[in-house]
Length: 194
Image (cartoon, rainbow, N blue to C red; front, side, top):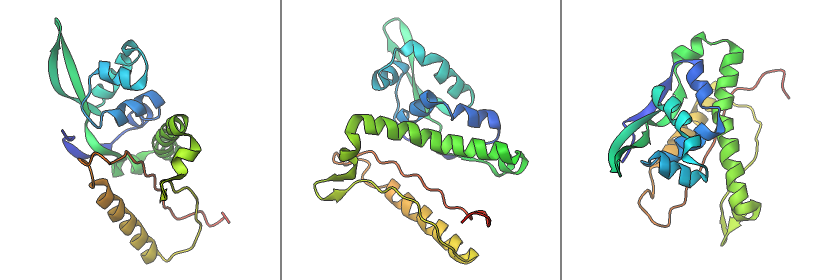
């Protein structure tokens, strides 16, 4: 089962703030496939009572949706799924937010999720498990600084987006496929930064 939308456009700071909490980030990542709160709790190794508040907030904001229901004894259990394949700030939010709000919302949402996910991965696999595996490089980490014309910068952004989209659609049903995270941030740097 796939989300109903490709992109969920975030319109306000409150919704961005929901995405800065590590528990909610993990819930959203796990709901890439349909799960109940019980299944989420098992996957996260926490009591399900700890998750109900977070799930309710995410559902009320429209970030997750009820994909199905099923009977669990005398109760009806909700099965949740992410509302979209990706979450992005809307042009309207970016146009009206103060620069500090834009910065905190964007960096908190992207890097908060990345930090939580990477920390969990390191706990499970250690750095050795990420670096190499049977002659295959499994991780790329670094920072590059360079200068580009505006046209070349546009080319870079377009090509990276196309490359990531191409790989994101591969091997979904292959049993040998492993979950992968890719974080990209390409931006024109401040002229005062060297």
